Image (cartoon, rainbow, N blue to C red; front, side, top):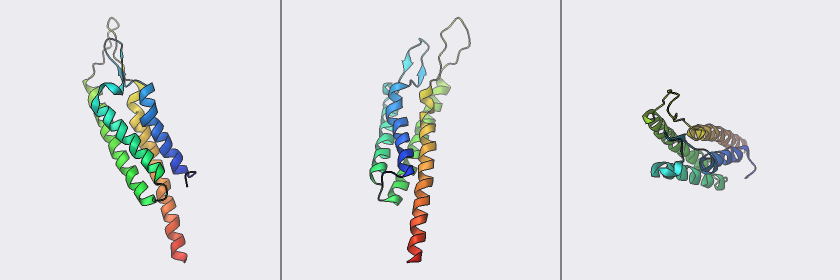
Length: 140
């Protein structure tokens, strides 16, 4: 059933990995230019895989175990993406000199965290549904 709460959580994850990266920059460079995820092939691939996996997970709502496994894989993908962001942010200069243009970390760097939180909530709801179905099967 598509109207389950985990579908809403997974849909929010789709927004966080498939729509918001086009809107929010990852960071600003030293020259003040927004650095979007499209400038790096690894970011494109990981955001694309995460979005695709989330959409497939929404469409496989009848197979809860498969949906749960896809949620876990998606969390791992987002952790890898978050690791790449942390690595890149450690390589960015964070000047505090008022004479220079300051490179800033953007809101786009927390999008994998948002996705991980909602995928975890979705997996919790999927597990709850699976436990409910198992308990009903024991009564038969």
